[in-house]
Amino acid sequence: MSVRISSLTLEGFKSFAGKVELAFPGNIIAIVGPNGAGKSNICDAIAWVLGEQSARLLRSQTMGDVIFAGSAQRPPAAAAQVTLILDSHPGHPDHRLEISRRILRDGTSEYRLGGRRVRLKDIQDKLAEAGLGTRAYAIIEQGRVSQVLSAKPTDRRALFEEAAGISHYRLRRHEAEPKLAETKAHLERVSDIVAEVKREYGSIRRQARQAQRHAQLREELQRVTTLLAVLRWAEAKGKLQALQQEVAAGEEQHAQKAAALAQVEAELLRIQRKWEEKAGELANLREEQARVAGQCQRLEAEEAACRRELDTLRSRQEQVAALLAQTQGQIQEEQLRQQELTQKLAQAEEEVGKVQEETVLREEAAKEAEKLAREAEAQAEEARQKLLRAVAAASEARNRFHRLQLEVEQIRYQQTRLSAERERLSQHLQQAAGEEQEASHRERECQAELERVQAQQQKLQALVDQERKELKELAEKRDELEHRLWQVRHEREAVQRARAQLRALPQSLAKVLSDQQLAGTVADYLNPPPELAKTLDQAY
Image 1 (cartoon, rainbow, N blue to C red):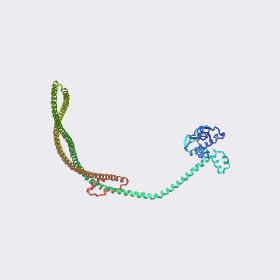
Image 2 (image 1 turned 180 degrees about the vertical axis):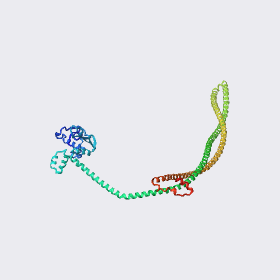
Image 3 (image 1 turned 60 degrees about the horizontal axis):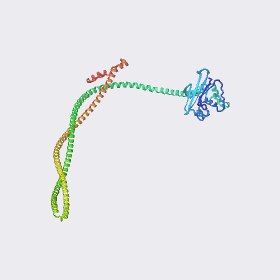
Image 4 (image 1 turned 120 degrees about the vertical axis):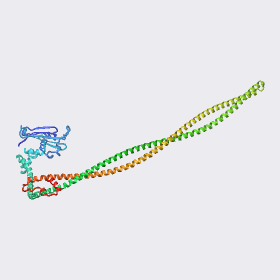
């Protein structure tokens, strides 16, 4: 099949930073241009999109070097993509082959064939059918012609085979030869397995006969086991009835114990409530006792304070009485001195009168009389001053005496109030002492009642523990009986299943064996005792 290039699209590949699409309209196309224009890059792009994996042949160090590295005017590209369209019949879109390859900066690469993502091998197979490839004669770079002319005949043969279109079949032959060798090995293995199976066939037949004999013996064993199960079922049925009776008796006893336990628990609850009531009363009495004791202490403290205040008032009363007696003595002395001064003043006035009379009579003694008068006046003035002082002292003494009388009356009032308070406190203390004695008596009664209730509670608790222990034992016995009952029921169900199998056995044998081969059932040859005859009749 002959194909030719229809178009080539480059984007980000080496020197082609932007998207460039090159069309090849004719059969022979020549690309000309100065050095560095990108002519060789177009050939590298065709080889790269056809699947070239060697970066050296693409004139690069790594495969990532084919991505546009950037310039002063344009930034580097993130990926490089080349799309090649091959056409086998120009003018027919159905015969076009579109191959695309894309590589990113991180080294990931992808191939697309006709817009569909494919593997590199798929593209190589498709190109091999058309006689194209990266190492074929379709791409002849500079210096390749001289290499072909100077090559050995064996090397030229590859070029001739590719030109003749048989290299594709040679490649498929190389791929098919390992598969044929693998298939041949599988066939040899199958032959070995078949031979081994043939060798084991005889032993398997012997094992089949042994298995058939085993099945017959197993059926015989099953018949004997069924008979034994029937006998065990009869025995288990009797045990089951006895156990049911024991279970019924145990349940009745359990119900009685439960009722007795309920009564005991009710009595215990009543006693607990009564104990709680007594405990509450005892707590109230203790609180009342504490309150009375506190009140007694407070009253005793008030009585002590009143006694101290009374002693203080008594001492102050004694001091006031002593001061009052002293003041009265001073008042009496002042009164006596006032009387003396009054007498002296009267004498001085008499003398002044005599002097004045004598002045008329005695002019000669005028100066002396005048002098005596002045002296008398001075003495009279001094006596007047003393009198005034004595009057002021008497007035002050009267005021002090009045204040002392008021204090004495106040002290007497305080004494009266304190005496009344003392009598009230004494009565209250007597009442508190009576209440305390009554509370102590009630506390002793409650303590005795509490001890009696606690003793009764301990007895009931012991009785409850004993009842619970008996109930636990009955529950364990009931569980044991239920387990035995379950075992008996399980055995009975097994016997019933065996009976069903035995009942179906004659019909099964009648279908398999003829009348001459069937001699009857096992029951026809049994002669059991009368007590087991009914059970065997039910079984067979």
